Every structure is written in C-alpha cells, then in structure tokens.
Length: 135
Image (cartoon, rainbow, N blue to C red; front, side, top):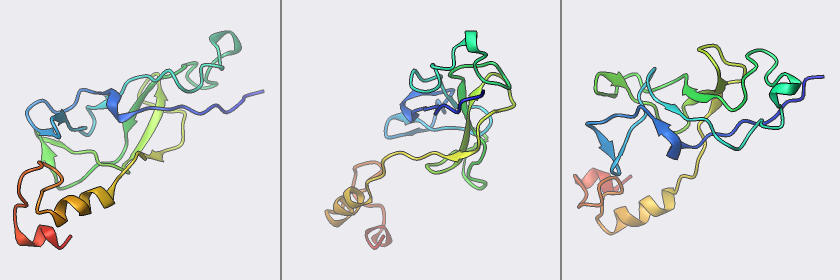
C-alpha cells in the first residue's frame, strides 16, 4: 500500500544559482536552472526495499521551480521568487509531488523597521528614493 511521506527542501541548499548577480551576498534562483539539492528530511522511510516512490522509485530527489517572475531576469534567465511553485523528489524532469509554493520565513515587520530608520532592507544602505519609505 503506498504511504505518502513529506518531502522537505530548503533555500539554503540552492544549487546552480546566479553567479554575477547576488541578493544579500548570495546567488538568486534562476528559472529552469536552479534547484534545491536533496534534503535529509523527507521520505527516507520509503526505503528502496519497499519500492521508494511508486512512480520514479526515487527517495529525496531535487526540488525544481515550476513558476518564476516573467519580467525580471538575471543572467538571461527569469528569476524565481519567494512563494513561487516548486515540485520535489525529482529523479527526472517528471515529478511525483503536487506543486507547492516555496514557503519560508518572511519578516515584513523587520523590513518596515529598517525603512523607518531610512535603511534599505535589501542592501542595508540608505533608502534609494522617498517612495521606498512609504512601502
């Protein structure tokens, strides 16, 4: 009987990120290139002895973005954003998981506090224009 197991991936495991454009000192996720490497948290209980994934027979595969920004590009590739849809447990291009949004911690309150002090939340320098302070 197939048993559904969660499959977890983390943005700090991003691979094939942008190399010339950095955000917060780190590369950005690029459409049809970047992925989250296999995580040790997920469907390991589905051992290969028991058939692993019923479609791909994969355990803890990569996570790929399936949606991205259509009008922002880095290095000639569209940029993937927070809350863009991903699919995981890839042994190949086809996936066996439902598309899910990339959900990690966001801290809008922290950003607002920085803006109130006249500090840009992205680069930690002064705000770039007066409209940025208004949110």
